[in-house]
Image 1 (cartoon, one colour):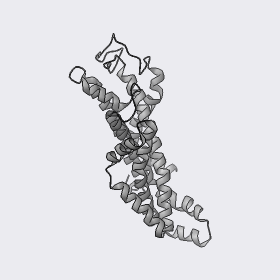
Image 2 (spheres, helix red, strand yellow):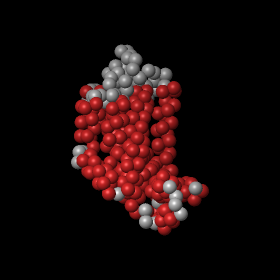
Image 3 (cartoon, one colour):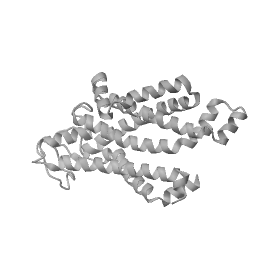
Image 4 (cartoon, helix red, strand yellow):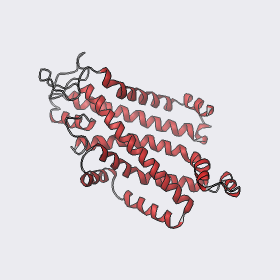
Length: 278
């Protein structure tokens, strides 16, 4: 544990990505209490006001503070993405471990279901789920989970197959450890590194999915703030107020940059071969 902590502190990617992600998370969590503005109340005396000390990122077509709406919208995006990806990680990893351990018919069924889901482009699958389930925050989380379940299932299965024949796993089988104990104590900890990396990448892509659906009007519904809805609103009057779309897009890019750098840092720190080179 101390070795990994020291490696994390020495890894510039992990530190920089963690710093950006921490700052974004802090702003998302604390921002709504620090901002004096409501994300939904209109101010018709400040329509499309440019960035100023009173409104650091300007206002939109209803006079609403853009920074406040970004902070509230990012909270929704992060919550939806994290919940969907964590659900996918739990379900997909359990299915993948079962497929690797049991093999046979169960493995064939899991892999064919994964192949079926992989046949759809991710965003097309999310759009299809919105049509089937209806619009709303909870349904976006379900769509993100459905996109990532086959990814975690295949990743965990392939990694488990690699470590299943390792001496420590065979020793646990020979001494009669229960299957659940072998999976949870011997196999899962040794395949955790790529799973954590995939979670970080999944959260980043989940934010893109949520923003894209809301941009098309299929996600969070007005007047509730959403990163995609803010950008869709800013597109309508980009020539008059370019700061709404531009600054919101930069905020999304910053969050994605932090998560991607963090995932690379996690991979370097948790992979023994890469950690030895640090």
